Length: 277
Ligand code: OAD
Image 1 (tube, rainbow, N blue to C red):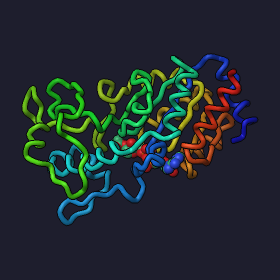
Image 2: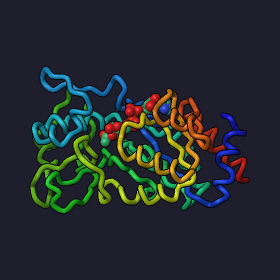
Image 3: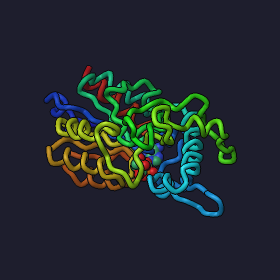
Image 4: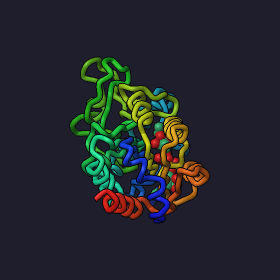
């Protein structure tokens, strides 16, 4: 890690008391055994047809075949429930402790691993939701609840029982519950996905650290371009060259660190602790 460059990009900005914001994507959970979104393991078979996540994770598919969508989510839930937070998640908890109310975590991950690592829920904006929560698909009151009792992760082969299907219905209006996640054919909003809060914190961000995302979604792109326009520092941590890393490298207040997040983040946090002590 080029500490001279980090000093140049970060020290003055940190002293100026701006906010440090971390934006994470699937890459940070890869070392915990959760397949990334655009990696090779995302597909799902219904009958004889193979679907990509971009087709399964849609309101349209939920309308056509809600059972297949739930089956897929319960499979993903099992993977998330078995996974453990890794050194990258833990390092971000240390970073939050270091910066206190100047720190915000914005995550695209729905796997709950940041919260399980001990991240404060108030400082963690889950902009794509959380797979361990549900809400009424009819949005009868818009409230978000933990998964009903008895709903647990499943293997690919294990079908949802009739009893379980019954519990996947809203206790208020009787309509089907849905996973509390943002689907590809839906848009961001504040009550469910912290859209306005994210834009507000971005406005105050002087240091943005991006971790393990391919930069394919809309709001993360808005965050990066807003921080850039404000002259904030942009650090991208990723094992591979990617859209945000290339952008950071081409920007005089940016830097790409080509390293797995579970080693890069502990190193980065240790560097900051040394500088701030
Ligand atoms: P992707 O699967 O698109 O990208 C994962 C990124 O992580 C890639 O750039 C990898 O190079 C990088 N990566 C993999 N292993 C890593 C490691 N150990 N350390 C650091 N980086 C690593 O996942 P996302 O960018 O998170 O949204 O996808 C964003 C969103 O796309 C998802 O949240 C999902 C999808 O649309 C919704 O479903 C709304």
